[in-house]
Length: 207
Image (tube, rainbow, N blue to C red):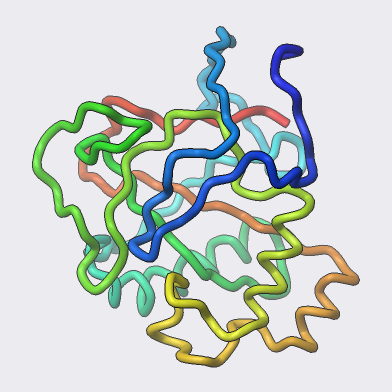
């Protein structure tokens, strides 16, 4: 919308802080604006990462307990890395963070919660509510910064801190080389329920 100023680089005026529990605080410097947009069925769009910025991929595998941090880190992370590597053709894939989102959790984005679910991942972060505002996770400023942070010892609220200790996920010298070439931050989302999503479905913006 022409009513909403856009920026690919960080201005420092709009941001969201993440607590040590993994929860996102209410945005700073943001005025919400409701805009009507057409919504299409992405299942039949044949979208690709290169052309559209997102891609639907069929992936069958034996599910883990997604509310158990150890199962996520030890079993699901390697599976995710293998899947992303197969789909993108990347030489190397590293997983470093995850969220579980459900409409059963209330937040500033989801005022009404429905039904009982675990509010905390076992030995992990808090379960999150759905994100109901259009957003992207990284800008042209924050993505390189995130890559640099991954070459430093994990912070207290980093998911891999309990696994890596003070060892960076990416060696500092490797991070410098990556910045000279082509790399990408890729989000992978999946329904972890045995039933199809009935509300708060994932929506993507076609690039």
